[in-house]
Length: 459
Image 1 (cartoon, helix red, strand yellow):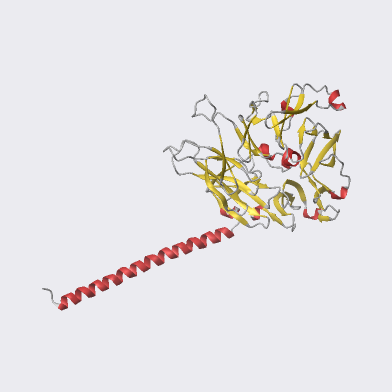
Image 2: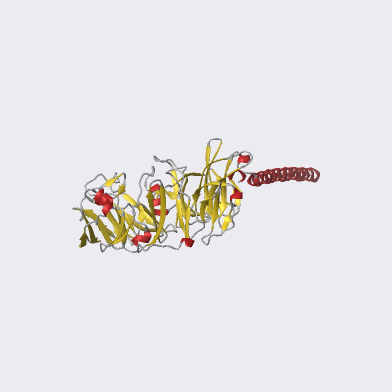
């Protein structure tokens, strides 16, 4: 039997040991906390540093027509990063390499439809306030191992990354490809339409009878003008499928894009037998009419009218008015010529057209009924790249560009030494300025509301 003294000594030793262990634990916790605090401080300090000081190079920056953000592609030591800044030049998405890719749609955004000018063909698109981005999927897959989702212009995931592939939103609907988890290799998928909350609206069949079910043999386009075009037919917003077999060769495509018919309102417009034909969605012929050749087209000896003369993707403003673009004209489904202006673009509810005389071009503006807009005080022109209606516009001064309000007031003078304006959005402009001492050119961003400048090297 142990004595009481021995038990007491053992207890004291245990207490002393616990004290030492507790002291070690507290010490370790403090070290970890200090390390975390130091790491936070480093990150906060780094966040205050300019991009160049952090080792970043700006590869591309993009502005958007309706959204007050700039989207950046960056590079640091060979790694790709993405970031997003608002019109106050505050980061809404700090540079991150967790994002691995962005969805681009050059056909959806080219100047014929959206009047947004990008450098190069591949550019991100913000539709319905959402931009399609991808992160890495750590699960073993046999494809590109990316998970696609949608981020809003606050830098938040509106729809978390979860899809195999995605298209841009339009009218609150997007077409995506899921990753089904019913097989270990994650190869199964479905093509579905979703809303802006990520909820499934309906499924789109990608398989044809009599063909290998392993092959997605039906081509599917993105959602535009109220419908999803596929090589099987078109789906409306409710998921109802309308077969287009009444159109000769309706499922033939060129470069992966449908050029044989357009859905205008609830009618189908197509061209064959040298006639423009208008059908109901059920395939009933409503009317047909010839393409009215202008004097210039007669002189050029324009050949037979074909389905490819229909404009690829009618702008929403026209489709909502039951109008479409064919050849060099805007017509309606009743066969009336609304506008015949050669080279033209649609911006908001305005037709902007340029007529050339030698090397010089003259801009003209019309409403969607083809009526000329002659009040020059409300018409703006931005260099050669883009047009703005009822917006401040840029014009050449004696040496540099000036920004002029629709009323003719000078908002930015030549003293700011702006030598070029590239991509333009409604709220943020990308431009460059000249240093008069060195004659070096520096890229800048301009807040069009406050007219504040910031050099990209100072970001």
